[in-house]
Image (cartoon, rainbow, N blue to C red; front, side, top):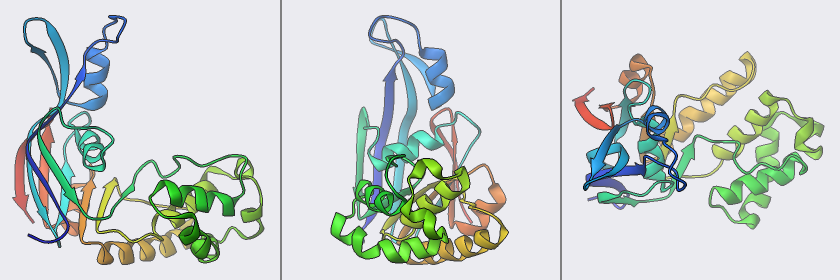
Amino acid sequence: MSKFFIKANGMSVEFPAKTSSGGALAVDRASRLGGRIVTVGRERQVVRALNDINLDIQAGDRIGIAGPNGSGKTTLLRTLKGVYHPTRGNLEVSGRLQTFFSLGFGLNDDASGYENIIIRGVIMGATPREMSERAAEIGEFTELGSYLEMPLRTYSAGMRMRLSFAVATSLPSDILLMDEWLSVGDASFRNKASERLDEVLKATGILVLASHNLDLLDRVCNRVITLESGCIVDERVV
């Protein structure tokens, strides 16, 4: 076994179907998280968002996750990241892990672009010193110029995405989780971002990419797993 890998055995993830005050959430949670509403024990209902998932992902694997809305793709990625924890079965993830979803999480509207480079990098697991050393290079890649000295609240949505993308792709990883393919900015910057993304993918040991685009998954991945109602219903080698 390689030094970085993802292994899941009989992994399930469940959420309460009701709020702590007793209000029903089952239908809403099932639609958002995927999975099925099941009864555990005599009366307790849960949303089983992932059910009996088995994975063996090793260095060099590029895994595609396919399935309709509500099938559990995003829930699986968040579980691999550690946002959700298995309620049954086992999950083991070994290696430096980075995610390319929720890229704007933790950004501070009152902080400058340079300050947000450090903030976002620390959230992703880097040290403040490491991010300070990388800040100039990251800032140059964004092409935001003097805006990097200005508060984030002055940025457009596209400028925020440039900043978040530049930080995310600056940090090394053994395992990369992506929820849909990233496309950033106008045509000229999009080409630059695409080249950077290709470099990141070549350098990372494991890629797990969730997408509705089957042609993309067939082009990028060596295996494609299909989810339906939180269950793996198909797995094929590309």
